[in-house]
Amino acid sequence: MNKGEKKIISLYTFSKLSEQQIAEKLLLSPAQVRRIIRKNHIPKRSISEAIRYLHITKYKKKPFEIKKSLTPAEEKLKLAAVMLYWGEGTKGGNTVALHNSHPTLIAIFVQFLREICGVHPSRLHATLHAYPDHNAESLKRYWSKITRIPLAQFHRPYIHRNTKGSYKKKSQYGTVAIVYSDMKLLEIINAWIAEYSATLIKRRPSSDGRATHL
Image (cartoon, rainbow, N blue to C red; front, side, top):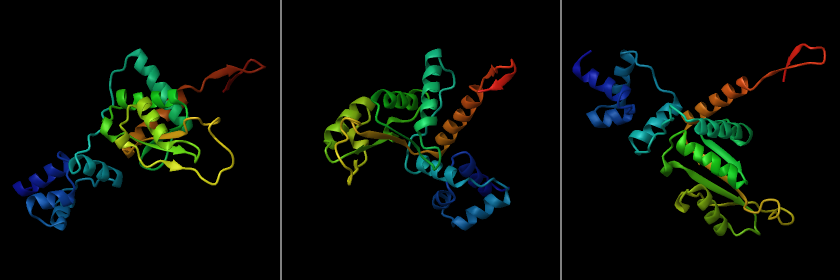
């Protein structure tokens, strides 16, 4: 491996640049970069990894950083948020997204993303789901205060039309979706769900004294 090839391999494996970024940096064609990567048997990134690293290296989006050592209170927060995501979160796709209308549940999940998952505040977004008889701007301000997500990071509200009656009593504050676009974090949360669900399956005695699974 010559010096030029070592440079390309280093930029791809350690600096996490894409083939296109390396080509532009070294004044090469993407095909040349791709050929050297293949020649040296460097594993190709998955699509989700490629998108994630492009966001970090090109668009300067801050990566999340999972907190390693948790206090007992943080362990409880993590468990509560993961169970909440198990019930209410989006499990597929490439984005962490949780919809709910309860302010406390939303606050818990946002606290979990910030303190346990180490997401950068600038990458947290929210979308308000409301009805025509709601004041959408007022509700955005309300949820911004609850989540501490700036109004500038709220997407355009989704107004549910063609519905009968008023939904204010059922959903006084509408419903908010907390969104963090990163497939890697979604995979980690789904793994936690699997881990906790397996751990929480306990055995109990049946009427004949034999142990059965819950």
